[in-house]
Image (cartoon, rainbow, N blue to C red; front, side):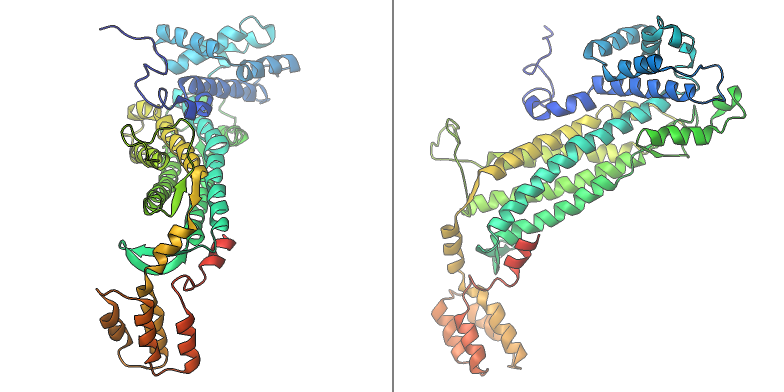
Length: 458
């Protein structure tokens, strides 16, 4: 069978095929290139840190030129550089060792750096480099992609909540007509839920370690027994912008990855719930969708404008959570001091995040097309006078009338309820005239409680 060249049409995963335009901003961060780049950055920073430590006399302090050369290797790291690392890996059959050899190759002709070549990867196990590379990848993805895109969704929902704060709407609990609300307030609920999950995502402490083969600084102390390696490692990790984990085996145990992905999965679940609700509101006619010239809703039914953006988002959120939840359950589990099951799984960090991003972009596109139909919403609400059974029986309770719930149940349940039938009931009640007047003036559209205020204040 012919092996096709890789491009967007031949990619096995839709992340890099059909949906590649939606995931482009992840490529520099979460791709194989991104992993190699971040490994290179960690190795270079480690060499700098060793050179800055007076107790390690064998590594001469770096002058400005040497330091600039090291920084340039990392900052100007290109796809061609990553290809060179992969070429070296074909010989070493070891991805991190290939990074070490790449750096040695790049500094070998520099008199100020060549003498320090054997301190590249000094006392490190591969996981010292890997865990910090992955941690930086996740930290930067969270800062530059995840949180900003989630903020865009929150902002779009908040704008809709404020715009429709006072649009009365029939609620549906169990799919049946229920106490009225406003369209804005129901959207405000999602704003509040997403803000909580956004805070949880932002609060996860992303951790790292650089403590050797099994986490005890064995090799470090063998070479420099008088150096406070734990303090040195902590300063190094925190200087990268990460939290330091002092207790590890060969690997950083990935608990923070589980925490981050659990938080992401919760946010995704809220987004999925939103997609289904908006889909339903579109189905009910509460929202229309602005048409786009040239788009086709159905291949056979020309009239259709399908809520495909919300359906696409819902589907991708499900895939995202399946991946994120697997990683969250698997990664913190490793046999004794090390097994390699996490290594292959970690290479899928970008998959769950990519499907999340695809979903968020689709959701934002869908939200941008929504137009409320107040006439349709009002008509639906005006057909539901039975919802006023609740305030009537509650006022009856206040004034001590017998069996208020039961009387309203008999009057309304399973029956057609109209404005006139409810008013006849109210006029017969033995309650103060002012209360009768208040109930008689009430309509389904006015019976919304604090909904408008809640929507405006979110």
